[in-house]
Length: 68
Image (cartoon, rainbow, N blue to C red):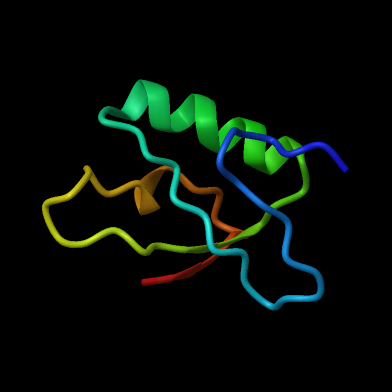
């Protein structure tokens, strides 16, 4: 299966997908998250450190799983 974004990898099987959208603003984060959601990703693990990048949890659909 093709990767939805460069530098992302599929881990099968897994309960959560470790993904860092890596966007400096909401517009870019929305674009990246849309590609991941279209690819079927619905669980996110936020591996960013405080202050590293703007938070993106508020951009996720309500049905998404999120771990910080």
